[in-house]
Amino acid sequence: PWRGRHVDIDAVRMGARHFQAMEDIGMTVGLPVAAPFYDDRVLEATLAVRLEERISPWRYKPLLAEAMRGVVPDALLARTTKDHMSSDEHQGLREHAPELAELWTG
Image 1: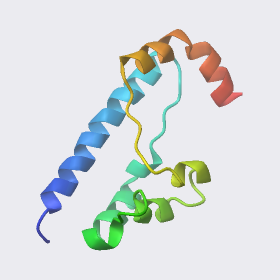
Image 2 (image 1 turned 135 degrees about the horizontal axis):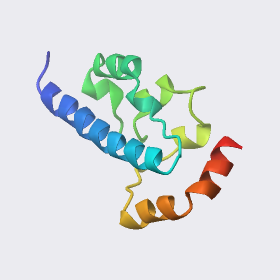
Image 3 (image 1 turned 60 degrees about the vertical axis):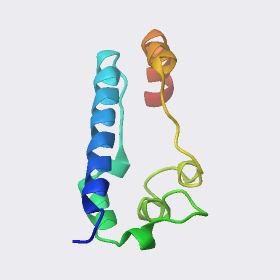
């Protein structure tokens, strides 16, 4: 192990807790929620690579993006920032759940 590993693991755990909350909200309104970046195999592979080899000042999470190529939409892989949901988004999910479910599931 190398220095900073605990910070990486803590960040993954925090993100997983956030995803669990989003999944719980989605389930209450009947919307499927997925987080392919939290797949065990993806996390294991990513954490097996040294930090300096998996981050870049020019690309957002380049190693993770390459690992997920063909699994998630290219537009998601090309993003340069991370979005944060607020209470407005949570309320919008609740209010428009049927319409969103129709869009997502057809």
